[in-house]
Amino acid sequence: MFFSDRTDAGRQLAARLDHLKGHDVVVLGLPRGGVPVAAEVAEALDAPLDICLVRKLGVPHQPELAMGALGEGGVRVLNERVLRETRVSDHDLAAVEEREHAELDQRARRYRGSRPSVPLDGRTVVVVDDGLATGATALAACRVVRARGAARIVLAVPVAPRGWTTRVGGDADEAVSVHTPDLFFAIGQFYQDFSQTPDAEVIACLDRSRAARNPGAQGTDVRIPVSGVTLGGRLAVPEDAGGIVLFAHGSGSSRHSPRNRAVAGVLNRAGLGTLLFDLLTEEEAGDRERVFDTPLLAERLAGATEWLGGRSEGAGLPLGYFGASTGAAAALWAAADPASAVSAVVSRGGRPDLAADRLAGVRAPTLLVVGGADAMVLDLNRRALALLRCETRLAVVGGAGHLFEEPGALEEVADLATSWFAEHFRRQRVSTPS
Image (cartoon, rainbow, N blue to C red; front, top):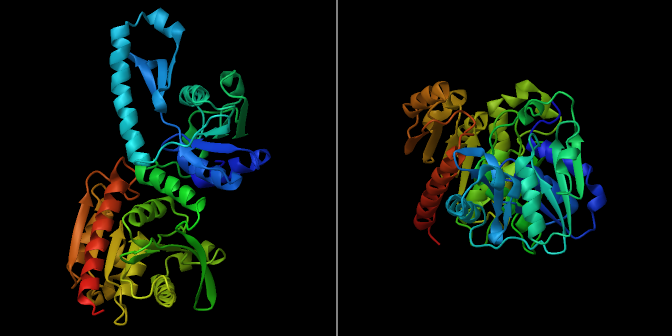
């Protein structure tokens, strides 16, 4: 394996593109998996990040064969050779185009909302995916980007088969890959974590990049002194925020967790603040005993909560905990402290059994979200319901596994969390005298 995940792949790829710094560059990620990779490249090049939406026009009754591609802004690229050989009629071509245009528009609204795409006229455009196998989608993207006025196109991927540049031909002016192995069966074989990228993560990547490039952008890197150590974090508090949610990540994860970052992005868009931070230092993260030391993690979370309460951003705002996996145990443990002032807790695929002795002491309304296919964890959460004495709800995301990597699963988690925090933060504000 060459990469731990797409974030790691993006950082390695960015190092190969250093020669583009200082140029008028736009970085386009291919949704969905290419966007987290592209986000790292855009950050390293200090360039705007956008998506490159492409829909293949498949030959009727032979949809795997591309007769062309559609892009945003009415861009249409046709393969005249395929059209001649397959004898596709104008009527059939129009029907396929109509269907794919509708899907293209739907995805554009989902990812961008009402925001326009980044202009490409006369600029150097870096088209990024998480890897290249057949290259059909990436090459179609290059053609669409060329049609949108790009002056120079760089096709960049973390991994591709040896000899892949011959496939690019004249579609890209430059082709960059970190690795080109001889034995290439699938892109995923080169990643430790190649789980599906949810739509929420794509949106979060775009939001973070846009915020970082605009004055007054939400999100500040912070250092949190807690119990003799200093923990890194990212604090984002929208104007007139209704409350702030502190994230307790699961084992083997950190403030860079793509899933927690995706959920945080949805909360930010809903007007809620977020604090993503590391529960352990880099040195401690390799110690498995500390990774599963729930009392220690809960102590760090409580310390970060106190630190946040002492800052101007957190003064007077309701606070909540979002815990994932083992981090959920730390969130419940901390919330059970009689001195805890948190207003709501959300557990995603949590391990409440690791805080079983403390569950009866939790007073904050608690939402337990579990994947329907995560049988063991679902059973643990059902047992936890009998021990919790607070307002509680168990929400089961049908068909989802422990990582919520199935299409739409993480988006459902984010929506559930947003509703839970917004409702209970509102109650807290109403019940607190001004």
